[in-house]
Image (tube, rainbow, N blue to C red):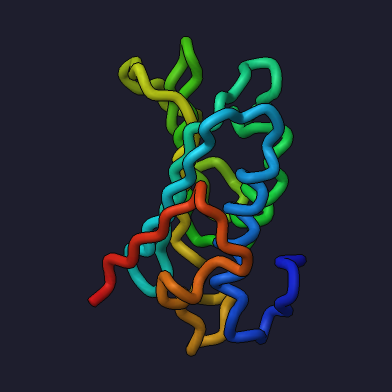
Amino acid sequence: MYFGRCHREHPGLAGAVVDAVVADTLSVPDQEALQVDVVIESDHRFTITDNCVNEMGKLDEYGLPLNRWALGASLAVSARTWIEIRTTDRHWLQEFAGTTPVEPSRKQEPTVRFGTRITCELDRDYFPATTVLPAAEDLLYARDERVSVMDLRD
């Protein structure tokens, strides 16, 4: 699995997964006023929320944006992942166990907000036992003013 500068045994691999998803989001073209919020919920769980405009014609059969390769890569190293997609006319949630959908996507109540929210619970069997997500200030490889990071751990 490729996550930039890290191999499987590297202690920074968990942080590199977050970095890849954030970098992938920042590379989506034509996104004015893009904002990405990263929340470290525990040593192995994080949520990334953005306000990217998702277009129905650019989603795969699971409802995932075709141009966001890091979402698929993050599924491969996560035990559980929840991906919520909000477009101008549709809002749904898809849960994965690894790369396998747990059930069909679930429609959610309509919302005025649009974007993507990804929550990943990293697979502890994939990562070395000592691997944890880094502190917020050490998380992103390349800082960007469009990204905010909050660490909920004490």
